[in-house]
Structure formats: C-alpha cells, structure tokens
Length: 185
Image (cartoon, rainbow, N blue to C red; front, side):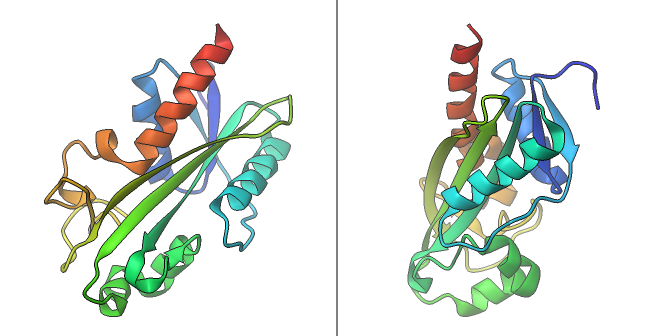
C-alpha cells in the first residue's frame, strides 16, 4: 500500500479499483487498493448492499474507505440481474444474458459509491447510464462491458476508448470527488 493516499478502495475486484484510481486522479484524489473480501448481503436494493459493504470495509481497515456496488438492469427481464449482477455474471455470463433477452434490449447500469470514515456515517453517491444490450459479445473490457452500449453510442463499453468518461462508475465517482474535495476545504 502506498504511503500517501486519501482514500482506500475496498474490493476483491482489481478492475474496479483500476478504473476508480484513474477517474479519481483526475479530481486530485489519491486512491489505494485495499484488497479484501467483503460480506455482501443479498438484497433487492443496491443502496443497502453498498451501505453494508462500506461498513464492513471500514471495520476491517479503520481508514477512510469507499466501496462500489453496481448492477445491470435489463428492461425486458424486469430489471434482472440488477443487484445480483455479479452472481449472474459468474453463473451464466454474457452468453447467458444474450440468450435470456428478448426484443427489448433497453437497459441501464447503476453504480453506487459508498464512503465511510471515523464519523461512521456512510455517504452514498449514485448514478446511472441508460443504454442497450448488444446482439453480440464484443472483444475487450470485463464484466458486462462487452454487451452494454451506452445511450448515444454505437459501441459497447468494451469497444470505447473513453469508457471512463461515459460510465455509471465515472458519474458516481465524480459526485463523490466533488463532495470529498469540498469536505477537505
């Protein structure tokens, strides 16, 4: 762990950390990776999951920490996989999603950044990006990036060079950065 950082990013997912580190660097926030397995409750609410995860993370590290939880909500599947996105990805993957989906390919990606520090009052920052599910899996990216096409784009997250400027994670991290930097002043 670097000696100088502003906030820890608690996760077992190095890809989420790498994206968050690049994004927050734009806002002058130094992030360090706190690689850990967090208890993740099963719930229909991303907010409840993120709150529980950040409280668990803070208990482990006792330092300012953020966690990220997100979900892919597909209209034709009544919002499925939603908060169960990680489990569903690990179980049926993008191929399984493409087999389940109907003609309505509308979807949205939702991300929540949860922050906790010694005040023990977690703060949440939520954003979403509307889009569509592609008909085929594209090369590159990770997770659902190869099948999610953000609104006003014709390429998946995996194909976009500037994904970090368009993503649900970027928007949530931007909200967090604005709040955090104002809090530091």
